Amino acid sequence: MATPHPRLTLTEEVARALRDGLPVVALESTIISHGMPYPQNVEMATGVEEIIRAEGAVPATIAVLHGTPRAGLDRADLELLATSPEVGKASLRDLAHVMARGGHGATTVASTMRLAALAGIRVFVTGGIGGVHRGAERSFDISADLTELATTPVAVVSAGVKSVLDIGLTLERLETLGVPVITYGTDDFPAFYSRVSGFRSPLRADSPEEIAAVMRAQWGLGMTAGLSIANPVPEAEEIPAERIDGIIERALAEMAEAGIGGKEATPYLLRRITELTAGESLRTNIALVRNNARLGARIAVHYAAGTDGGS
Image (cartoon, rainbow, N blue to C red; front, side, top):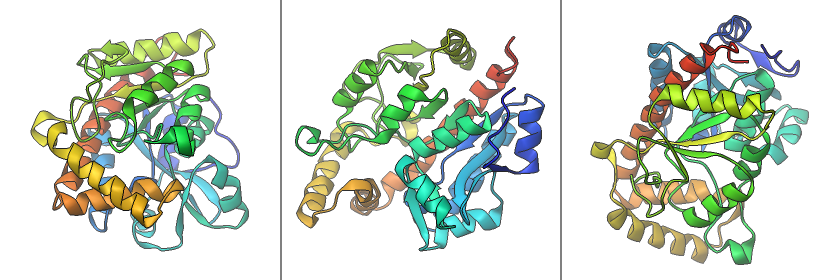
């Protein structure tokens, strides 16, 4: 059993679960503060925590509040993240700065992974991971999520790479970094809003038990890379690629015209795509996060029940 880092504050529920070797699932907070409008963001966050508990695991939403990294939040904390303009988007490069200033930071995939690992949490559920941005051969815009996956032993359950990114180049980069990319239940790599991206998945697993076994084998060999688990959005909730692709292209063109980039790019695109789809993309986003929570909790349960005690 890993000992949580002393700079982290854990709720009693999360601390007890980690101490007793029970399954715990980390959740990011940028999706709350920058990924969805209010009040859907709070409803999504509380609903996902309920799903994880129903599957037999303990949810641990991660954020920096009042300068302190936290694993496990209450309703008031979620409301603050969802509504306060003082909450910044905190990736790895921002964590120390937010802490030193006593500020609030909503953690991205990369920073959530790092804090989850420091807490001793091995499974993390999100919506979609970052990656290589379109046009990266000119901008060099590549998400810190990828380098964090290469160095931090946490299994990240998502609906694939965000559709606004270059999925093919992201898969190539993950291969170079030695990150196992496993798609759940299909040979097709998903594309966030859509079940099919046009790329074949590097690896496939058909049960949570199999994914937990891969996690134990990976880290049992002493390899420190995480795992990217791609879980396709439910068929009834997807937006087919042939419909969403044109909308994404329009949003990207508008973003370029407005001169928006860096860490503001993804929040802008998600918001604009929600507008262009009259809310359909938001409903799909919520559905895929809930679907990922179910799978992530089941993986955590099987991992914790492993012969190594999930350590």
